Image (cartoon, helix red, strand yellow):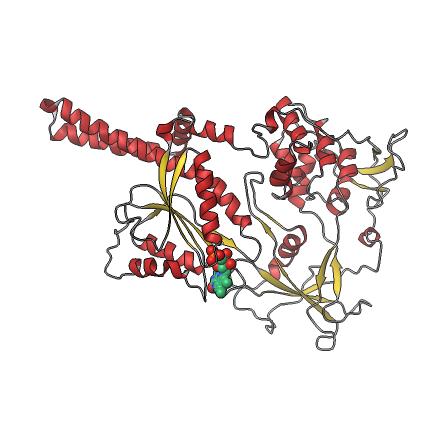
Length: 520
Ligand SMILES: Cc1cc2nc3c(=O)[nH]c(=O)nc-3n(C[C@H](O)[C@H](O)[C@H](O)COP(=O)(O)O)c2cc1C
């Protein structure tokens, strides 16, 4: 990369136990690879930086301690910016991105970062990148890694805007100095007008993207950073050791449309299944809480289900309707959704001991199989990726899938598939020329498991009722998953009980829920 692209940004951190510092060091280390230079300091080193005169973008990593307090090393800084005499445009020249660290087990989640963020905004500073709030309770890396990944493009866009502004300002001043005789009020104001228009145009994303492409910043980012669909050396240049192709062992046959789907109770191998009404749903957390906890009450009076508080029980849940439809669409099978499918072991298969998967009924509709039997959200195993290679027509996509299941691409598999919770649908979006057959999905997707929960009520106190509490699981959007998703079961339960939910100040004792026909 060209030396003159090596731009500086100010990197400030405040830590109590060392994590914010370690993350800042990681940012500093990665900056070099992006042709940038991080001028890193602890927030307490106030003689080494000066936000009042800072022109370059500022990145702040700050944790929380005590009861929502900034770390000790940030105290002086916070006190300084809290000064009530500062004017509202005090930091109007400042562009910054802030990463807050905290733990959602504490009442004032990430309050150290939030305090600084709020005050900088009040003093006129602007975000060049959205604030990230990382939760130590679930793993800081869930937010930190994607936040850092996105930081580089945001910084480069900021530098680009600054560069364009500067060159336009230079253009104005050079026209002023080289042609003094034509400088009059009219010309000057028209130049200023141009400058304003140009500035607005630069801010429009189309132009911006075009400009980024023009100066190769984006191209170089793409070239140097691997992603789900893109590899870099050495993986992209390696000869690959890929697993042998597993022999196909399943055959599916579409049949006429007569008959009924099996009862859901036939899907579980142990114990009895009951369909019961949900009689109450209460949101236990506030609207602004980082996680949403729901309490559901089931009416089990008509069942023989017996329990002790704390016992585990399972909920048989379907896959998300929209995801099933999307999958049917991508597979080109939407028209056959209601057709009955007969699943058999393929005649003459080379797979030893091949049997029909027990979780697929002998005869049921295609939609039933995708809705109730297959874990379509499962993280694809390498053997599945290997099989998908054979269904992919685009050469580049084929190669990337080979890499992801190869020995050489093991860390890419971990990073872009396993740790990113990528599922089959994500892969089919990312590799659009991949068109797997239905039998391949049935062979490789595992059984859709019933989800376990703990009973939070007592039948002595609430006879005929069973209560349980869960957090709604969220998988945030990331480069490999363009849309955020909720957990299969918690997402389904949430949709199911939406009509019962009364978010306003419910508590465990509230008797607000009305009996309903929602059933699990
Ligand atoms: C004594 C103590 C108090 C904490 N108080 C809070 C808090 O009020 N709010 C919060 O979101 N996190 C709180 N945390 C969690 C930390 O902010 C979190 O673990 C963070 O990752 C620590 O980063 P650091 O090592 O850079 O200080 C606290 C942690 C400790 C050890």
